Structure formats: C-alpha cells, structure tokens
Image 1 (cartoon, rainbow, N blue to C red):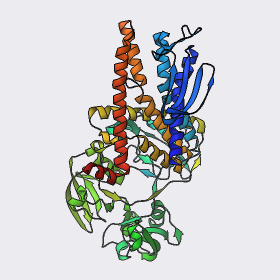
Image 2: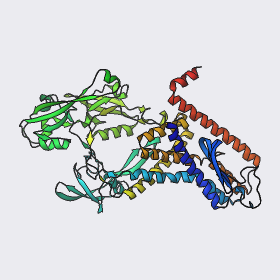
Image 3: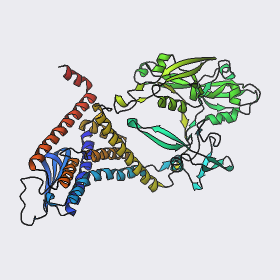
Image 4: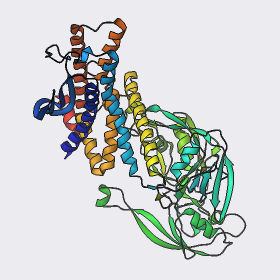
Length: 554
C-alpha cells in the first residue's frame, strides 16, 4: 500500500501541474502532441484529436509536449502558427507559468477541504492568564469572552482575528464572569514567535490560553500541612470534602474557605511500572490514596495555608546529558527565578530560555526548604526539528508535569469562512517555508542531509494515509507547494529554465541558439540527476543506516 499511496500522491500532483500547461496551451491554440503522466515505457493511453494521452511506467514526473519543442517536429498542413516557439513571449510565459501556479493554487482547495473537517472549536473561555502579560489583572480563569470591540466572538480561534493584528491598540473586551457581564480594555503587546528555519512572526498577544491546569499539586515545603498529610508533588487530587475535583480551580474553591478544619482528600499518585513492560515503553500506574488535610488557620488563600500550589513550576523530568542535568538540577526542584526575575509560569520560563539562546542564565531553585542557585547555558537540541543540525532550536532540557484540560468543544460557527481563511494562511506559510528552505540550503545553513527523495515521500505518504484522508490531503498540499516553487528555479529542464530563456530572448530580441539550448539542457539534466542521487542517498541512509554504513566501509 505504501507504493499505492505514493503513486496516488505524486500522480495527482503531476496531473495538476501538467494540466496547467495543457489548458493554457490549448487556450492559445498551441498544438499539444503528448500529455504524459510518468516517464519511460507506455503502460496505457489513447489518442484524441492532436494529442496522445499516456500513462508511463516511471511515476516520477510527467510532461506536456508541444509542437516545436523538438527540432525533429515536422509541422503538417494546418499547423501554421500552432507551434510553441511561434507564440508571443507573453503567451509562452503564461503557458510555462501555468504548471507551477497550478501547484501553488491547488493547496488552497486541499487545505479548504482539510479545514472543513474542523467542525468543533474550543470556546472563548479563559483557562490560564500569563503573569505580567496584558490580560493579567483584566481577565481571570473561567471568564467567557463574549465580544471584542463590539464584534461577537464564540471561539478561541476567532479571538486571534482581533488580537493578533492589533499590537499596541487598546481593545474593549466584553466578558461574562459568573453571572455578571463586564467590560475591560486590554492593549495587546507585540510578541515575536519562533518558527522553523530560524524565522519569526510578530503578532499581537494578550497572554491567555484556553488550557486549565488539572488538580496536580506541588507541595511547597516539607514542613507544610500538605507534607504532614503525606501528600507529594505531582499527586492529583480527585476529590476534596466529598466533592469531585477536576481542575486546580475546583480545588481552590473548596479549600479557600477553610480556616483550619480537616478536609478529607482523595488523590491518585503516579508510580513507575518496572519489570519487562518498562523495556518496551514508559508507564505510570495511578494508585488511589486518601488523606486528611488541615490548612493552617488565618487569612489568605486556603491552598497557600495548606502548603499547596500548582505543579506547574516543579521539574518532573530532565533530559540526560543536558546542561540542566550537568548543572545539578533534580526532579522535584521548583524553579523560583530566572536571572533575578520571579518565574510565575512554566510557559514563560520556556519562552525566556528559548529566546535567550546561548546566554548564560542564573536560575534559582527551591529544593525542600533550601534555595539553590545554578548557572545555566542552553544548548541547541539537534533533535528539536527535522531541518538539520544547523537549524536546531535552543530547547530547555527540563520538563514539568502539569496536565491541562480545555472546556467542551462547540460547533464551529463559521465553518466555510474559517476553512477559507485557514487555507490561505496555511498555503502562505508553506510557500514561505519552502522558499526559505531553498534559501537556507544555498546559504549553507541547512544541511543537504535534509533533502528527501521518492523513498522519503513514499514513507510520509504511507504515514499520512494511515492517519486518515485529511492528513493525506494536507501532505499533498505541502508537497504541491514544494513542486510549484522548485519548478520555478532557473534550471534548464525545469519551468524556471524555460522562463529564463524567454527572458533572454525578450532582452536580446532573438531566441537562444539550438546549440546553447542543448548544452543548457544537458547541464540541467546533470544537475537534476545529481540532486536525485543525493536524495536517494539520504533516503537510504535514513531508512537503512546499518546497510548504508556497511556499504561505505567497503
């Protein structure tokens, strides 16, 4: 089936590409001799009118052969003015451009179909407010955003329409908080978000997300009431005072009113499963426990008086060999500050470490009742992206465990406009990534090991098909963009090479000689074959590394 998925994927994209050439050639009255899907020996075909339609044995390309493209073409009576070279330069440009442009436009349709599958959306309910961001002090977890500047919003996706382009502009938010409706004014700040290939995107942000932390706790001190109740960091509370608990907000609402009374607590504690199973995959078993928690009396938050906080800032895992591992970070440590600034949210910590690059940081940790200081320099993680070691991201080697939940999804209120918007956005993003991939290769900042060939395409096509039709169509859209842009490169044998010769002809007022074209075509063929060999080599080294290493040793 891998071969079938590959043929379907490549065959559709080749057909779309060649159809662009074919339709515009026919529109301008050019005689099309052959429309071929694939190269090599003919498998099937038929002839209708002037054109022979062929399916060939090697599904790695295709072509539309027009009268006059070969010196061996012999026009017959009635072919006057129907040869491709006889057309005006602007007509030939359109015919040549039509193929790549079809590949660049086809993803709009594919992504539209893909995003039509997003029939459910996350509602515009605030789950988390980032400390120190514009929404801090204006919005609270649990708020339902009803409108921005008088425009109704129903989903989190719709919030982006008004917030992202409005950096520096004050916006009026209409919010439902409990049984009250209120308004507040928030000014989005300009944030630079990292993307692949060392690209960034500047957009407006107010510092909210829909995810709400589950009731997974961190125990502040070994001398706290929580520790006395034998609770541990990363325990998940599932019930308190006889009431079910899902989110950390639920737990806070139960404990905050307590002034020193005992609270029965039901919780589950993760314990690592050892034995033969652990050799196959990591697994934790959640064991139920019961405890009695007695918060200290007095004013303030009940959770604070109980010595409990969210597990958000507690380190759960450390990547072996990472700078954090070498600096002596340990699971269970709580991150207190970064470079002298208090850390209030893990997402903020990760963002600051990534953006800081290779800068030396001073990290303060709490371990038990002690505070420790560690010097840390984040290194590039070669496994963080699939675009080569030269472009690996700065990735922290510490991870927390603070699972979240989102409110129940609601029907997408504007499915067609949403799909249309996302189709243009995603296509534009793929065009940008493909362009910069080629640019980074030319600059030498992206290793040639990232170039994949037919085997790589077959592998990802099979993976996408296994995940479902929509994933397969999304992959097809991505590869279509690649085909469209790569065909515009000024390499003979590609459409970009033909456009280059047309441009030379327009400047010099005469076409390039047949000898020049033949030499250029030969050079283009050598370049394409070299690229194909390199892609196959990369595919073999990635899919069968042991065989490739054995071959190199010999």
